[in-house]
Image (cartoon, rainbow, N blue to C red):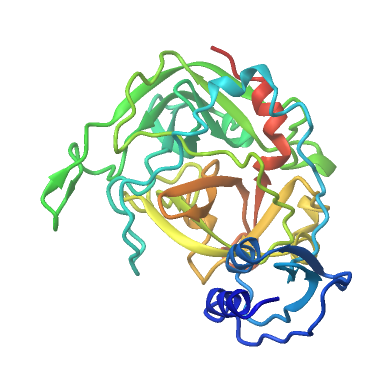
Length: 359
C-alpha cells in the first residue's frame, strides 16, 4: 500500500473510529468478522454501522482493506422475484420518504411536514360518533399501510382515512414561529380493507402475529404536496431485528381505543432496537412467542408506542431527507414502559404488500 493511499485511509477513517491497527502485507484472508473491500466502501460501511472502535488490517492486497462488519443472518430474506414483481411499478420508489422539515428538535411535537405520510383512521362507533382510532402510512397514491387489529375492533367500523393532519384541534395548521401554514387536510373514503389472511386476534398462539393490513382509498391522491407524501418501504435493505439501531415513531398519543384524550398534535420520539429474543422474554405470556416477522424497540419512559397510535410507523432515517418504514406498531405493554413494544416487520411482508395492491 503506497504512502498516499495510506494517508487517504487515515483521513477517511480517523473521524469514524477510535483505534486503528494495521499489519503490513500484500495479500491475506480477512479474519472472521471482516470483509475485504475498497477504502471508500469501508469508510461508508463503518459510518453506517456506527462503529466506535474497530481494528482495520491492511492485508487484502492492493488498495483493499479488511473491513469489520456486523455478523447478521437474514431471517426472512427478500424473495428473488420481488424486484420483478408486476406491482413494483405501483410504488413510488424514487419519490418517497422525503420530509419537508429537516430540523432536529429536542421536543416531542412534530413540525409541519416532518412526517407527511402519516394517516389517521376514522371509525364509526356503535353510538354513531366518529373517532380517529389508529394511525397508518401512505405508501402510494391509493394505499395506506396499517395494523390488522385496527380493522377488527368490536363495535367500530373504519370508514375514512385522513391525510395531511397535524393538529386535531385546529382547522388550519400553522407554524407559530415561521409564519406559514400547511395545506388543508384531505379525507378519503375507503374502498377496501385488506387484513393479512393469517391474522387472528382471538387465537391464543397467533395473537398479534401477522398484524398488517392495507387500506385501498376510494379515490387516488392526485397530487403529492409537502404535507402529503408516501413513505419508502425497505426494499434492498437488510433488517433482521438484531441490528443496533435507533428508530423514530410518530402518532397522536391515543392511549386507549375508546379514549378521546391524548395529544391533539402529532408527536414523535426516538427509540432503540431490542433483540427479538431478549424482547420475547419480557413480554406477557399471552403474546409469546415472538417470531422473526416482528421487531421490538424501547425508548425513555413515556416515549414509546403506547403514547402513539397502533398502525403507525417505526421509521429509520437512511439519509438526510429520506426515511423508510421498518415496522408497524402492533402492541405495547400495559401499563406503558414496562417492556419493549412490538411491531410487525415490514421487510417480512413486502411480497404480501405487492400481491395485494393494484391500479
